[in-house]
Length: 69
Image 1: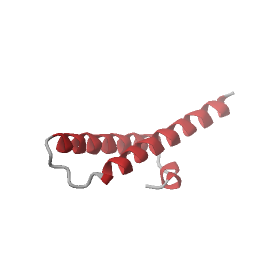
Image 2: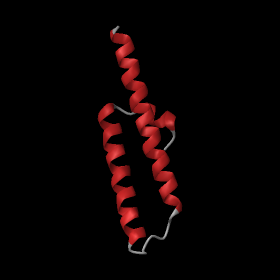
Image 3: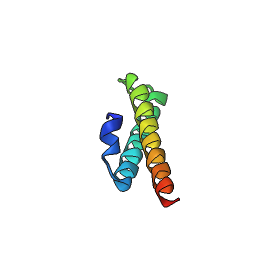
Image 4: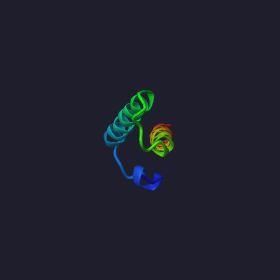
């Protein structure tokens, strides 16, 4: 998912998306540890997706606090 698409989501939707991505990343790690992971490139995609979500959440948090000043 692109960062611009993430910026259009609400705080709750971002939290849900982050939770889903982290769960998928965990499941993929478990599959890798038992030798069943087929798409190891997905690790990189998911890590970047989580990072994008966290970045957008932080931007929104800072934007909200700047308005309150």
